[in-house]
Length: 125
Image (cartoon, rainbow, N blue to C red):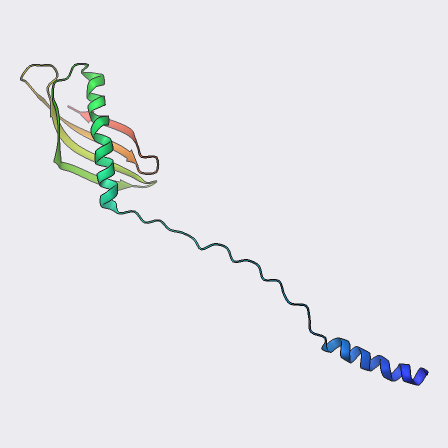
């Protein structure tokens, strides 16, 4: 009986060594990184549309009763900045009151595409 155990023990170890290991659990793959690209012309258009009332409001703060305000869209320049910001620079003309005299001005408007808001308006007369 001891001899049978002596022979069976190595055979049992051999069989145990041949046993297939448990399957490895696969980790779920992280989701792919999404990169959103935005059309620069669309951002420039949105910045222009948002800056127009902001510039008019800045004029009203300085001149409470302005006459007509005209921004020259053909002179606007767009500069894309870091952090989804776009600077719109342009020229305009307004009447400080109901008189026929007009004042030319240059404006710089900072638009944030993430928030959809104008962050700053600077004017030079």
